[in-house]
Length: 64
Image (cartoon, helix red, strand yellow):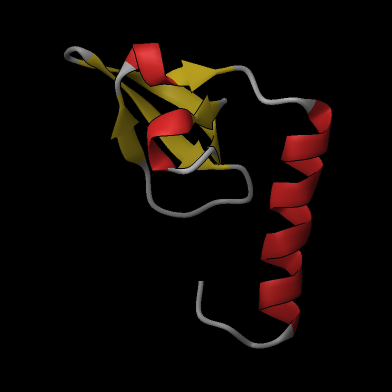
């Protein structure tokens, strides 16, 4: 899923929390809440890009 209210941040749908959807980064990390009207399905390219960016950050030793 892509959260348009957070500059097209890509995340996995985790569940519903009141009026919001809980999303989590594709490769792990802290969940966040998003309004359903701001969320759309991620394209395969967006999912791949998100995973690659995380892998690159880990290879540089950045704290995730």
